[in-house]
Amino acid sequence: MAKSKFIPGGSRPLDIKAQWEADAIVSGSKTQHRFPLLRAQSVIDGLFCSLTTSLWLTLDFSTAAVTYVSGPNGFEPIMSVAKKSGDRMHAVSPVFTKGSTLWAREPAWKDDDGVMHYKYAGATADTREASGFPFVAAHSMREDDTRMILEIINVSTERLQEITALEISREGCVDREDFAKKWNKGRRKRGIDRTWKANPWVHVITFEIMALR
Image 1 (cartoon, rainbow, N blue to C red):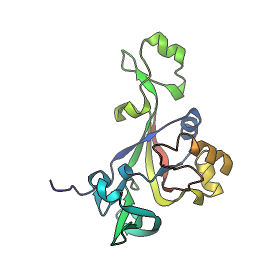
Image 2: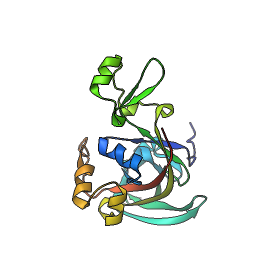
Image 3: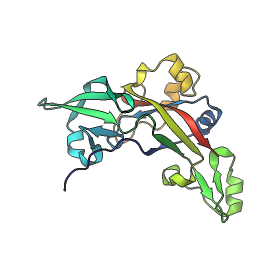
């Protein structure tokens, strides 16, 4: 089967994992989000990484370098990454593009009248039990049920610890220690260390609220 070319743009989910994060987005104090570099959120040589699994596993990101190339949506980050065998370089870029959108996924449920009740918007365990509807996990939420749509206004790629004091405030955090603590929660999974100390590569997304209900 022929491999499909990556089509930029579109809408991507942003999982809201805590009350503080939802509050910070709604209040406008969080205007930036860092996604760890993952295969599902990246493109290799113009192809979705989901189509190039075997290639992804051969790449050596420890020596990667980032350049910014002028594209249809402004300057876009492109990583030059060598294979572990060192035979050639590959271009890795984020699926996120300026002008596209993020939609927030969070724990919620829908009642008989089709009204959504969001955990981080005041829906409590008591009201959930009284309604007879369980919370739906964030990753199960449909895009149509979101209450937050965010427009991406800038995309960059860098090491996590390159974050500045100003960017920490844009993440909705108080200081470097606060950001590192919140970042680390649940980060080490399946033996892959993406904690603050590991200083992983991240895609940095700057956004503004497009719609809120």
